[in-house]
Length: 478
Image 1: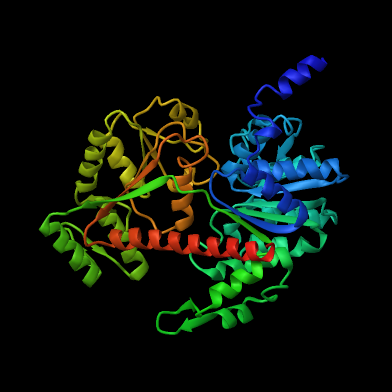
Image 2: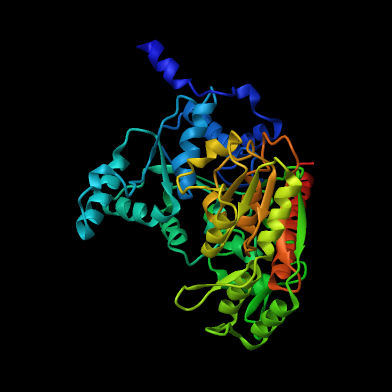
């Protein structure tokens, strides 16, 4: 029986502790020494094995309590449970994912409130698992804190928050729930590659959960007033001159920053629309109304108009009843050119709008679509498909796609640096043997160009922040 146990435990092992890279060992030592800290590590640098190695060390040094890992749903279900099995020094670990899927056979035949009640009961029963590591999706944290409050206990002295950029809103239910249990937490480690993807304002709530207000105060208002200026006309906050450097100095001692040398190149593919089509675009942009002959589409307001303009640039858009109206196929023709140029190389194509997926499937009938469960991951990595269609929100975290190809086409441009970075990181990660090529399809003279520019600008700004944090830590330990 012992032989069977050992054979099963180590069946999936690919690496030993000796295979940890120097920068991973450095990060492990950092989190050992800093009970409340953040790892701002690039996509693909091994944040998961770093934290599991920390947990292994804690257990060896006398910690016998439970560990809570909070992560996006896909990462919670697949990445954390699978990672430990691939390392010889971690393979003994077992985890319980505190989640009940909708297709669970125990829910079969139940409807409405009865189904909801049963789902909650089943999920709550998982909290009694003997496994010391519990993994939960971020959306269920408030539920977990509520259950523990009812039982008058909080068993998790060690908490890990994967993709901590999702803590950026101090008003979110997840932040408020964690704030309640902070007094009972003895270690809190945050992981993310994009801590301030849009603004330094997002750092307030993340850092608060590490120091309970020691660096920036217990309320966001003084933080805003000290480091930002409010523009009453635009109703936005702008960081004060020199404030970014001051914020970085204050957090450098608890934040470890490591960026890999970039192994990807961005190519902005300029897409030209016919003069008439472009004239209609500009009129829509100016008047907030698009006349399609048999249908008039109203931009309503600035936010809706931006979404409609991006749809227009991609080739189709919805009306108020979600009916799709085709505008042009120029991006599809550009994608066909990329197919011809790359010859036999697999292409990962990112879409944002549902109507884009429909149009891509019609134009490229042999393309496959990444499923929600991620079952297509293995086939992609075996290079079984020439084209795979993905949504940034579905593959943004926890998927290893670097073995299936190195060309990424972003068909619909979207305004999220976090998803942009994570999407590229699915290909540009350890094990990739080629330079990743990112092709942005951008319509000339449209909102596409603004989005493409800002994504690259924000990426450069965040890289600059990381470099300064590294320099500050270097001086502190010099």
